[in-house]
Amino acid sequence: MPEGPAPDGSGVPVLGVFRVKSGTLARILKFTVGPLELWALNSSPKDSALRKTLTNKLGSVRARKILAENFPRGSATSLIEHRAGQHNSDNVIEELASELIRKQGYNL
Image: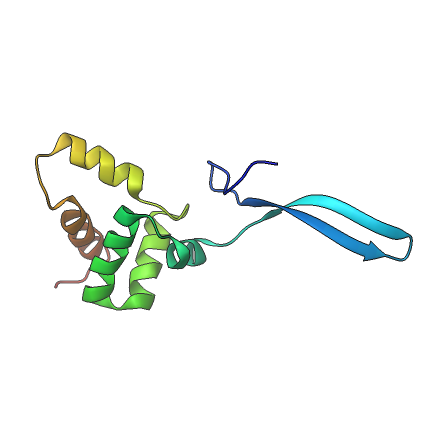
């Protein structure tokens, strides 16, 4: 059984062992969580920095909602790294946060 979440964002395999009337039943299940939970639990440095930047400007609930709508798999790391490779900017995360805020129609 592989460790950690599936690369496609579909969930984490879990071994479920159940006692039933006829004995014990063991199955490999896939534990899934939604985009809001993924963003709340994500601890990667780049994603955490983006979430923190948005949280400081919009509050925690609104920030996670925006992130979940735009990145439903719970991570923006690949986009952040892609943009960092294209631009010589140290503020890729700040720029992405501002772009997401503007996209929502907020004028901050």
